Length: 194
Image (cartoon, rainbow, N blue to C red; front, side):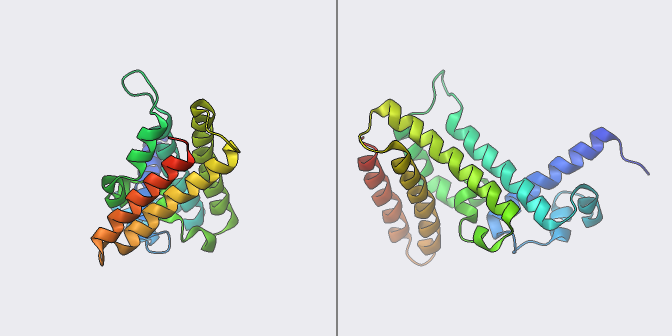
């Protein structure tokens, strides 16, 4: 039975959203296509009707997650964009660290992207550049001294690293996990001239 274009688009979106969540939770290599299809309410055959490979789905899912993360950084709330301080506080919060499935795709996948193909690395690179551009714009507005791009790259890498390291030690040393977030928040604030 042929699926309508609308239903096919819904199925594709369900696969991308489900894969994005599962990949953030367990990593690209930690989830199989059958599991993604089942979690999306479809068969793995349906997955291959939309994507030529798991890698193609991973690239699309990563892009989806990165777009959501970027949107959070640049969407106005109460009629204004988030301030630099608000972005840093939000990103480095214990709540964001603990919500891997809905958190930043950059932090969730940082350690495994180097083992993926070039297409996935390119998507990650684009997401990283967008994140850094948001911080660079804030640094210009903030009138921070020094090379704004260099600082924006350092801030982005520090935030991603802080979330990754904090998650890595959380089960064994929750206090250390929280210290990492607070130390990076304070240090990045100093770099940003807050």
